[in-house]
Image (cartoon, rainbow, N blue to C red; front, side):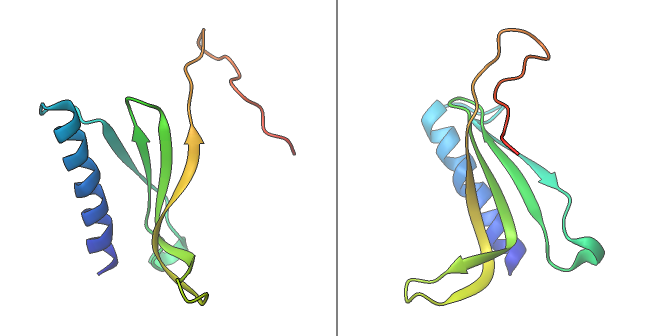
Length: 99
């Protein structure tokens, strides 16, 4: 069921990309699998990149979610990470995070 939600999300993003671009081939949204929880305990994750505008999301199969009625539970969800910007040269530090 959880993998079904991931596939549904990725299909929705790819359909939107194809409709937006009006062509097939390399899509607007690219997804890469990330390492999950140790021992395969339901920690599937994916890095999703909007190749046109630079937005980044992490899809997680086992994320703490707040439901509309205020309760908290674990389930699949997308977490927005921010927007990337291009650098001017290889190896350039774009933004350093505080410690």
